[in-house]
Length: 228
Image (cartoon, rainbow, N blue to C red; front, side, top):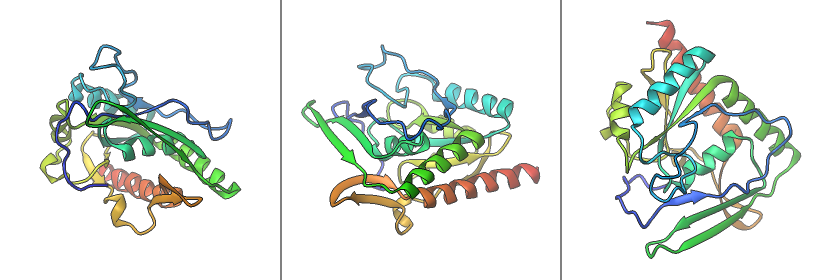
């Protein structure tokens, strides 16, 4: 995961397919914003980020919903180009084993990467635990940082977007919609990023480390709210 901020390039646009297999019949739905994506934005291929909408409005909707559900907002600041953003979304949903990604190269050609994860029964349990924790504690806001006004949305929380150097940049907000804490770069924590599975190149996360980091964010957001 590069610490460099990406350069706008309409020819490079990473998207994921919908072929990922559900982890278990017991997975819980994740509340996320934007709740839907327009088909008339760019080529209509986006899966997570609305590249045409006002990102401030998306964040405000997430904050409002989080208050109603008594949850915290978790901002995932990135874009369709960010493969780790899509990986994170799949892990939040409790997916495992099969991950099929597609993206456009510099020439506008579609490239495909089918990832297969070697898993154990414990991995399946970890996938379910991660999904349940996110579903019960967070409203996820996918804020786009290249084609839309994502910086403005981040500024709304009281955090300076100029201090963002890696993606996805994951932020927890307190109950007032203000910055509480952010996760360090996943590449900075040993064993957090999984880049090989079953002898094949892979992109994933250690689910237990990810869950631990999310619990820290939730605790930080709760403490800040209690102190206000």
